[in-house]
Length: 347
Ligand SMILES: [Ca+2]
Image (cartoon, rainbow, N blue to C red; front, top):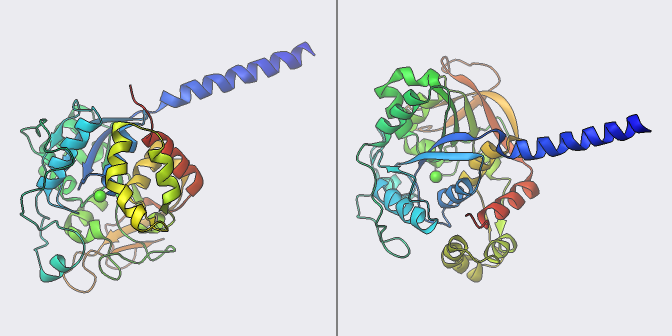
């Protein structure tokens, strides 16, 4: 009896120790690389999730041209940091154009304004007082990896131009990056693997295929969050209402920017992209993955920017690397965590 009781008490103590220890056990030192825009855009929502997660320490935010111009990404992220009262986080301007990809009639026609040189519109509440840092994104990435070898995780949720430029500037950083979590690509080897900007290409990889190829082949350990897993999500009005039920500066912003969408289309369901990438870093058990070799076609033409995944290396993909590819997720557990964290009142 006594032995049994002792064992029970020991197990209870162990559970408590694991619970309290687990919450802070693994803190990721993160560079957050983003083609940012204010929520409801997915980068904006993903940043709020990261800011409200103690598992993540953001050392700096680097901006890149993608959904909008790099200048808009920069002014929007500066403003959101003010609203979130996190002006302590430095912001670094990155690439304002892809490495090679030129503006075209097609680029102007389809979604995304990476090619735009229009001055950014004022974000909600006006331009931030906070300014971006003097040095550029690639230089910051190089400095951080050299300062913390083996410790830096890059969360890359826009075109991969900044990361590719950092590797090009200092190839010796590649073996010293702990991991990159990438939102990008679409893998036809797995379910739901068609593209969203051309029939087979995903937007981030298509904007800068040369950069995507260089980063995927860099040898840095990669967790890839492609369209396959994004397509398992669906943010509905029900979850939106749970978010705005709590009143904070962040949920007020979400109500102002996301509310009109659900008012005009109450049955709308929005895919979540960058939010999944960040959530998978916080809790890898949320996603189902498969190890595949993944490469990107950077040959101009039919398959520009198309990512291809295979179980083995195939002709043309010599030099491709094996990585962890997400293709499914525990939706209920993911969205519950997401809503709980976004609505957190952070001291
Ligand atoms: Ca993005």
